Image: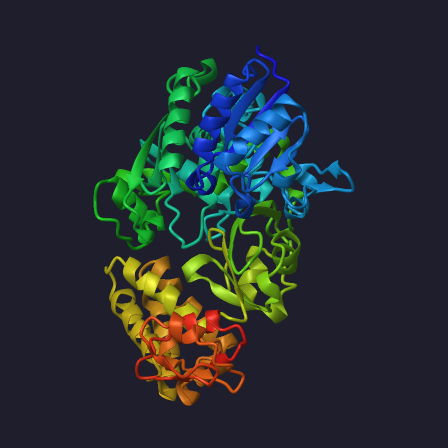
Length: 596
């Protein structure tokens, strides 16, 4: 085994790759070789570190130097100064990674302090394309344990005892779902992994598959043994090319090692696994629609019952869990259900991974114990709201979720608490909004998404959401009436009750939630014909105040020549010409232009 004095860890998640981390890796390897350091320094490309705001990230061990926002031009300096001369490049260190004259470890950085990484434990640590690195971190030991020491019902009972709930949104008890599939009368059974992550701004499952694909493969094999299945499919959207490629590499490597296929661990257990690509339809995240898509049919949901545990893929009993749910399984088997239950809350044990985005300083991927408060996530982990703006609301649960306002910031994050206050866990999207966000426009944005993604099978969702969107567009254009608010509520409640699947049943949630918490904002649009935040352009007007010094910068910046005035004289905006682009506001050095 080769021994190296230094390891250069480079983030290979989608976010950092989009900022050239793959080219940084290539240049780093070439420079190290040119300096004859390739026998001493190893470059490892990993999955996501989580702190996406700081990417591309490069960490050099054993020192633990956490370099952020690394560019191609910085590679030479890291190699020449740090790797060759042993001098840390302080200007590239993450802002919190160096204090009081010494380096901080990754876990000492505020972003990571209150996290508890179980599912993401290997992400940013191991090379996801090397099965030996996964095995070195106890990989496939859980599968070996269940095949050689446990009976199928022992496995199911351990998962039931853990209290693990589905991380895909519904929160159904995972062990109970496994038990139903075990008891199903079916000559063939299938294991299905739902990796069709379609929520705007969500990338939890993608990052797990990019950073630790073997954990999901191992978990699916464990589930197959527990319920009596021999075949599995991972349904993943084609828009995740890095995750798809690494997952296929992992499957091939597992087969080569005899960890997939026949007589696994020299037992009579056989399990094979394939990938099925989705075309990016949000509705295919619903389990019956996902099944239809795998079968080659149009992805549309079906009535339940029967449930997939009874009649699923090709009318055979099928177990469906999402990526994050599966990723918890190996650790529960190895460390025990009692260990898992010590984390989180009594009703929601374990951790939850969230994609933190919107108006937040530290955008990225976080994993927290259930019961952590919104305040801790937004301010302690997320770093607070940029530009000293006021926190206004957070949306959890993706386009089907609700909004939690500033007065609910101490709410613990678990299935029951979020539901109590009109939101939901969902798959793990968490979008932060500040004082500049118009909540009417936010409701319109998410409803526009669900209208586009409706499969069209049932009338309430197909037609009802379109009518709701038309009303919201009418309001944001300044043509709304008070009765529109009542019509919105009535339509929303009807759609929730009458839609066929979860997409339609939850599509009205953003509208109902904003109507409940921000009704005055709706009234301002309808009665006063103004948008309090200045977001809705049709309700917006620009005015030049008496503070204008006549510097002419605004008129020069206006793309449509809508501003007139002499030098050193107050200027005037022709509102018939004004396209409300806001360029004049950004160019005025005297803050003499206001919008209202």
